[in-house]
Amino acid sequence: MTIDMVMGSSCVFAKNKALQANVQSEMGELHVAKSTKRKEYSKDDVKLLKAHSKARTPVARVSKLMKRSEGSLRQKARNLGIGLGHQR
Image (cartoon, rainbow, N blue to C red; front, side, top):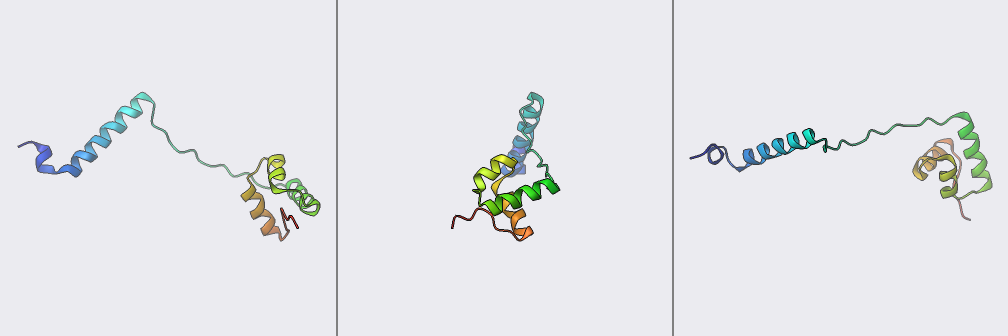
C-alpha cells in the first residue's frame, strides 16, 4: 500500500498542484494578475468632461481622448450630476 492510497485522491491532487506551481515558478511561467492603478480626475479633467457633456460628444470619442474607460467616464459624470453620451 502506497502513501497515495492511504491519503486519498484529494491529497494527490494537492501535491500535484504544488509540484506544478514549483516547476512553473522555476521556469518563470507563473502569471500573476496585474494590480490596477487608479488615476485621479484632475480639475482640468472635470472641466473637459463637462465641456464634452454640454457638446454631447459620444462617450467612445471622449474615452479615447481622455484615455479612460467609458465606464469610468460614465461613473464620474453620474457623481458630478451631469449627463454624458446622450444621443437624443
